Amino acid sequence: MGHTFATDVLVAGAGPVGLTAAVELRRRGVSCRIVDRLPARLPFAKAVGIQPRTLEMWDRMGLVRAALDAAAPMRGQLAYVNGAEQSRIELSLPPEVPYGFAALPQYETERILEEFLARFGTGIERGAELVSFAQDADGVTSRLVTPSGAEEEVRTRFLVGCDGAHSIVRKGLGLSYAGGAFPEEFMLGDVELDWDLPHEYGVRSMHRGEDGTVDDTLVCIPLPGPGRYRVSMNVPPGFSAARQAGAAPEGDGIAHGPESGRAPGLADIQTVLDRLSPRPTTASNIRWASVFRISHRIVDRYADGRVFVAGDAAHIHPPTGAQGMNTGIQDAVNLAWKLALAVDGGAHPDLLASYDAERRPVGEEVVGRTVRHAAEGVQADPEDPATLMLREAQLLVGYRGSPIVDPPGEGPGPRPGDRAPDCGGLTGPIAVYPVRLYDVLRERGHVLVLYGSGGGAASGSADGRWIDELARTAQESSRDRVETCVVLGPDAPTAGRTVVPVYRDTAGEFARLYAVDGPTAFVIRPDGYLGARLSPPTAQALHTHLAATFAATDGDPPARHDQPSARAASRRPRLPSGASERS
Image (cartoon, rainbow, N blue to C red; front, side, top):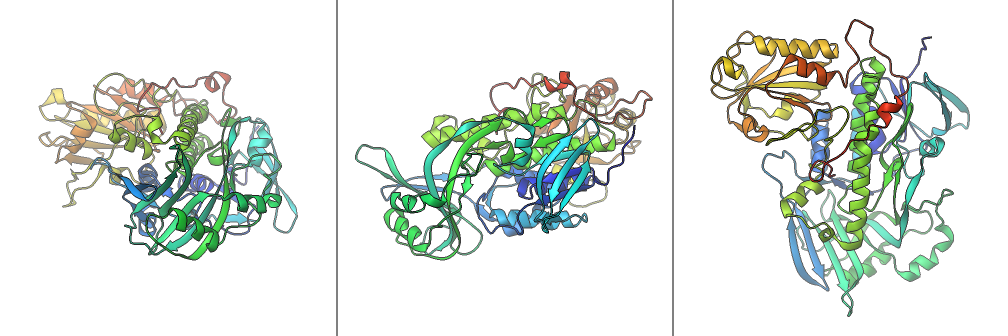
């Protein structure tokens, strides 16, 4: 029996993760509502580190320019022990990575996402709180309390919980949230500092006692604006004791994030600066300050039927390496394109089960790594500096072993499940300037990229027949949900008979970064990961790959997603050691 839904998806929580989910759904034509119990955006510089991988995803979404205009660059970190400089870490990445590290206060990230969401006619329903929900085979019935105190019942196909560490959605699903808490409390402040240290570098200043252990720490992360930093430091024992009456965690016992009660003032922050700052400095113009608690927890599953959790609702951990918000944003991007296909009737019945299969191993790895680094430093995971930097940038996240990507196989270059790297030097027949591959992919969904080299018929580029056959297969196997473009080697004959866009790899960057020397097909997913690498490319192999993502095309109508099958839910990927499982 069919059902009519006024709204396809309800998103609970309008932080960076919930806003990302809403943007990605609305970009794909999915109706959604996004609610948040807070009456206004909080002016807190909580999560401030923006990883290069997040900027790549914002590029794909079409909003990276606004973020670049608002953010401050992060070039590296200066480390001091007992006032003496110990090291200078440069945050350097390979030249083909299009973005570096950045700092952006969370309230600015939320503003940019909210303004972008408004372009699609959707705004945050503030002061509206999700209090309960129930799901059945056809949808989810949610109960909201509006700002006036009235109750509203909302019927949607799906519910996405991006409602933080104290998530109502997670509790309503009865998900476990295993982990623990750090005993320390930290003070955070958003202030201006008048020292002469380079503003594009973070500062970590520690004090070692006579026994060699670190007993005091100050961390300063640059923010946009002259001399502005988010500073964090240990809470002095006296301050902590003075605020115990207002410091109890919420009723669920999870102590994570800013606490209520007395907030530190400029004098409290200045006292620590006087003790630990590597240069004499005075703090001024405080915007916000709080006491912060840190826990580390992760759910036992990211989804149950038609209800999903993402971001802090699914995983919380130390802020080491600025991994939390960025990981949550990737959760939302991964989930949203799959939900959009399910709403549209174009998804394989098991597609939504791949959200947990792909993202929970990433969350587990991030929680484990950040806890190790918080306790022991980054040296807890000894690696060469280049690999460490790629990992911290979240450029090594991957989904090898996922049920919806092909086996990785052997050979150089990115394999199925890996991030699709960017490259430059692509030229078209009309524009006189070269473009990047990410320019070609921007604001598109699944893209089939066909590479042809020089050398006649064996290269696959003597004419456009092979291209048109694969493009037609992609269209038919996905019901017109996969776009195709062609990249030809510098010496390849022009595929004059093809009807799809053609670019020439004039600088040879695509061939080098993708390690191709003959005709190859790449399926690049909406979240920027390779689903397949086919060499030689055949229509049958392409159809087989796409059949794991898209609804059957054997003449039956597209299957509408109901519940993920038990078989799919149990198909957790076996992630290999090394780059593909990192975050």
